[in-house]
Length: 172
Ligand code: SF4
Image 1 (cartoon, rainbow, N blue to C red):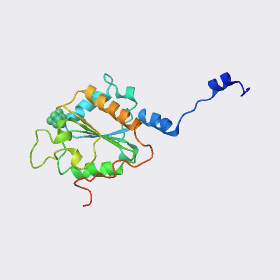
Image 2 (tube, helix red, strand yellow; image 1 turned 180 degrees about the vertical axis):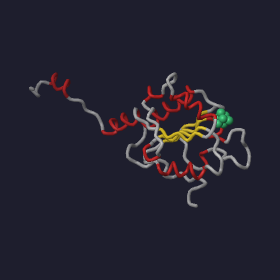
Image 3 (cartoon, helix red, strand yellow; image 1 turned 90 degrees about the horizontal axis):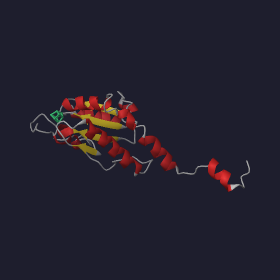
Image 4 (cartoon, rainbow, N blue to C red; image 1 turned 180 degrees about the horizontal axis):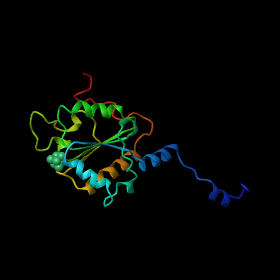
């Protein structure tokens, strides 16, 4: 090929940044770990099934080991007894990782304002997107996944996220 021919060079060479390539890959290959404890988990099942088809957004590879996952989706009520388990799962996920709180219970405890229920998972792990509703519809969960995709495009690529987060189970 005559590299002095700029027209041919334009067709043969693509220039980009490493950040753009890494983000492109991450955006289209989120691997969720679903911590489903109650009714909102059923909505997530609908989100993953054929009608709503989360694979359209590249996030259908659900993992059942936190070490394989980069997107923690908490769908349902979380009790204080479950809180250390959720925290351990989050800690075992490699960086970078993102968190979605699905529904009123995961976001705030919902109407379970009592002595057994964690009043929002952001008391123990950092949350990137909250999804309103009791339960939220599958479209809202898909919108949260797209929100994560939008966020990660704007982030520095090789840094640990949320280093300054301190939850109730940190430093104990
Ligand atoms: S937010 Fe509503 S639907 Fe979701 S887990 Fe709580 S009670 Fe169930």
